[in-house]
Length: 535
Image: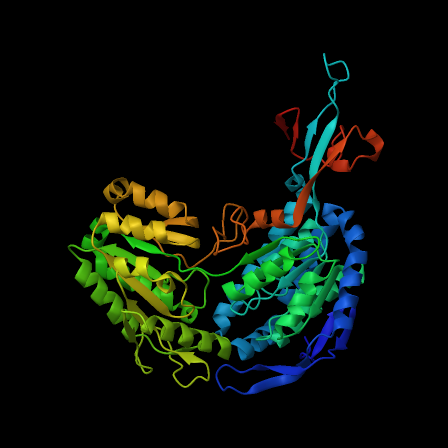
């Protein structure tokens, strides 16, 4: 794999940008990394969108096996990119090579999962209700329905997962699997990584003989670049992972179009953790260490980091709080993937310091848990923090119910079960909710757990929220503001459902129906026929 050269990938071509220059920043040294990129110009956005619009009907008609071949070719290309790709990612993000190797494996695996899904084909949810012209009263029409792709999708790369949630990540994989062209807006924190991965995707598109508009990569750090993409009339949907502020801005832009389009945004979460009384009494200090270690993974730069811990006053409460504080205080400073993350973290801590809470920030030279390595001198280094509030304060001050993105935990002891229930009911939507307790705790606090379930997309028993398994049962989403549409997951093969819509054919000539809806079922799909599921 060659080094990045500072280009956009548009309609099968590589070309420099025409706007303002910018470059990636080495998070450890604070210095710029070559090459210099230039913001995508309006004419480049127009060219990419026009090519995607031209590719859309071709991809829509592409058989599932051909889509699968594209996805497998991308996966193979990412593996073949080898160590040079990981070295570039590490240089732009300060993420360790072991973590990046695992992330590439995850990215490759999800591409192949989507390939298997579309090659088999039943995901289109074909439904046939055969007509009955002899039905008494009103003849019954012949109705046949399946899912079809929306059209060109804009995908915004995420800063914290430069492979799994970026150029060839889950949004791109699922959109291509659905038969949608993809326009990626690369994240400005890792443009070199984006270019190298984009070249892999572009090469796969070319090798499969697909239209050049199937994929495009556009660089930019100005909000206006993304705004132009979202508002382009050729764009049919948007996928986003990032901050609530940016995600909501894109959502509002898309809703304000003359023809609104869906924005599937995952916008962060505090991932509340409830420690119920018996668990608190029996294993409080061990739980505190487990939760702190989860919150410190990647310096809290996971959307599933446990940022809020709730418990009730009583036996074990003091020991739990002390153990949580000690573990966070002992943790070393570490780098964020970009200076903007550090700035946001420091701003959030400043906001909560203005409230009647205690904020304890770990010394920069903390020893840290076994196996941890510090980076106190990193240009983007942040220090872990414990914000100690209460159930009453959490209800009074909305800022305490919003995410502090980074290695911070808000601990909020409650007076009793009634206050715990009130706090949970006051929460906004989150990606996950975790409950630590015994079987007796789960029965006694069923009302609290039911309230928590209404606030989250994934409910976890006696575990930690970090670690998102890529599988069909996963739900990575949740009620607003965790996501803009709680009906869909951003992880797993069901995420393909974001990029499709149902279409019904009524009394259509049999020989002109899609293969998926013909009576002889030439593709051998599982289908619902006259109300019965048939394989």
